[in-house]
Amino acid sequence: MDSPAPPPGQTLAGYLASQDQADASLHALILALAATCAEISALVARGALGDVLGSAGAENVQGEVQKKLDVISNDMLVACAESSGQVAAVGSEELEDIIVFDKAADRGRHLLLFDPLDGSSNIDVNVSIGTIFSVLPAPTGRAATAQDFLQGGRAQQAAGYALYGPQTVLVLTLGQGVAGFTLDPRDGTWTLTHPGLRIPRDTREFAINMSNQRHWAAPVRRYIDEALAGRTGARGKDFNMRWVAAMVADVHRILNRGGVFLYPWDQREPDRAGKLRLMYEANPLGWLVEQAGGAASDGRQPLLDIAPTSLHQRVSVVLGSAEEVERVVAHHAEAA
Ligand code: AFP
Image 1 (spheres, rainbow, N blue to C red):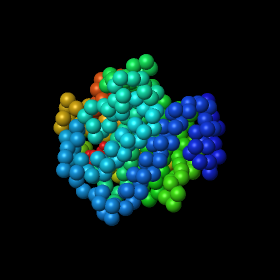
Image 2: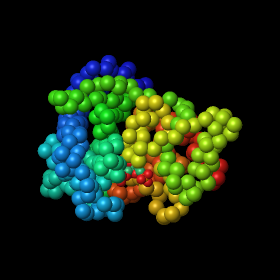
Image 3: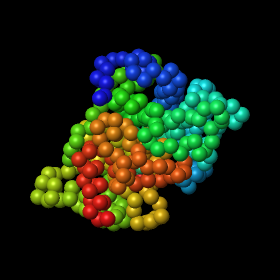
Image 4: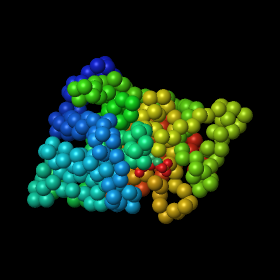
């Protein structure tokens, strides 16, 4: 049973102190991450005035051109993890290899994974972007290795994101439901404004990049065709569509009013499981969605049940309102 939702108006520190799970080092890490996200938010808000827009002139491990803000926010989160003293090692979308803070010692109880700036293509056009993070347990009695990061999504101790939109919000789960906090940019404080977020089981809204339609597998085409057919089709209701091109923003909308998000495998690169990354995008957001009563799948199995094989592993993603995710999974099962 989930704990009853705490009252709105609490500070982040107060909320953490009220949780059943009294893990002081985890709470200290979350407070440190929240403070760094508040700093990133201030940089994002200054935009061109802060000389943070545009390209950094390099590519990341995914072969994507890095934006200045990708690099800046990555460096800020690495520094935050190290100075917090709670983290043994970090992995990031922007770093090919993990960083171990002390190779000679058992330092920090957690492993931290992050996508420092999700939705990079939105930065220069002033559309929502975010930071996603996932916290895993670190090994004890020895320094962490890359292998230690390959833990399934159900091993996460905390997961969350900061969304830099019209408001900056921090949405968090420690495995006891999902809570949302709003940043007051005047003093950098986070206040609980969205306790006990729940995703309705059904919806009339989907999010997918429709320009890839001709490349999708048959079960995904069938699901979207049925939605597009509207009230005279198999679904008997009209659907609306949204696509922000920042998963963190699409997931935030789904956590607040329901919906389903898909970034499926497609046949342009058949050997690639999908576009999105399992460890620092799909797993943390998938856990948040499950904790809010939704479902998260790769079309065949829950995202959180996937046994990871590499840090930058990609995955096909369907998540959001449970009824819709179940339908996509059923279409895949039928096709198989
Ligand atoms: P970037 O961070 O490289 O912009 O990618 C964002 C993202 O991983 C995810 O947040 C979006 O949902 C998805 O890619 C958008 O992809 P398309 O540009 O193919 O629509």
